[in-house]
Length: 431
Image 1 (cartoon, rainbow, N blue to C red):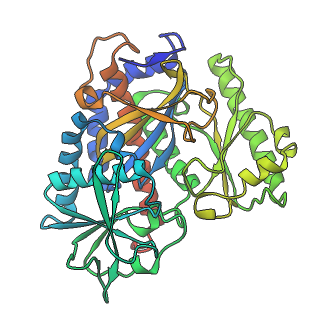
Image 2: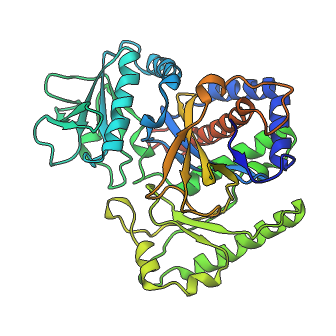
Image 3: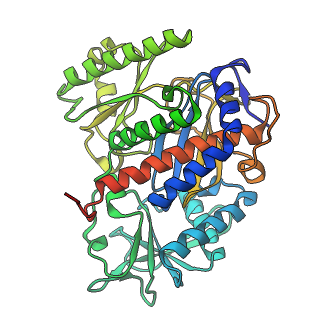
């Protein structure tokens, strides 16, 4: 089932779907050549918004949680991708150490860890969990509502290696986005593979760097398909020093919001789109749906109340919000049971392995859905996401729609690999 789209079945996105299906061999060859030159992130997830006239990634996560939302039918794809990824990095690997987030009481997050354990266990690895949290001083078993349990142990750092008591891993997988900074315990490791690398964490990473790389990718992909890259690319701007509580940097925000709204307005006019443009303010570093705000008019910024300013002052782990990306707002015109929905695509290595719809009954089409009250409905990727069906009417075939989502998600993953290369502190610099 393709979720109900409130736009008619004849919008630009259906034309784009047709163009993507017609160009599939060229697209797959293009990706293949890109992966010969660039290393994909070890794993990633991409939030996509489908406005009916535009389909674009709005967030790319390099430390995806939520693996528990993938259905059992999707697991074989994930296991196969995990095998391919590990084989490239450390073919003789026996032990995998997963370093989770510190919020150990969240049962949904723990279910995500268990799903990762299942995937890598099936891929032929012993998997254990080691926490960065000072609260974990001895092996701690946590019980889940499902009756399952998970044991989290304190990390042990020897001279140049990281492990657990009686457990020396070849590979360390971070499922912690390092929002609170780079822990010294993870630095200067010898002959151990840290995935993703430290500079993928939010203490270093910036969304504006990612979307600049994505802009480049979308231009080249647009040329390949013969389409306007705007149809798949959200425009953006960035402000580097903002403090909502002290009203600092508001001029920068106001002028960029104004400028971006004008650009969107021009594009809407060009395509005959009868919608009110909006932008979304987000932390340039950080996730978890915190510090996010929809703006339809720059004047709204000067009218913010104290409550709104407080909400926009801190992000995850109590970090102050000072760098902001102003992103073109992309409506979501998808529905699951009348609730607003957006697809989230999961990838491991260079492969799409599954995904789900994030749905939120209390949010509008122009609002952030990654918020308390969201729920998840699996996508049918496992059966069909990699097998498009030529000849079907655009917008009517779930394999074709999910294949298109997978293409857009892989473009964002490719942008992430460009981004990580550009920010790698150990990259060789050629004159």
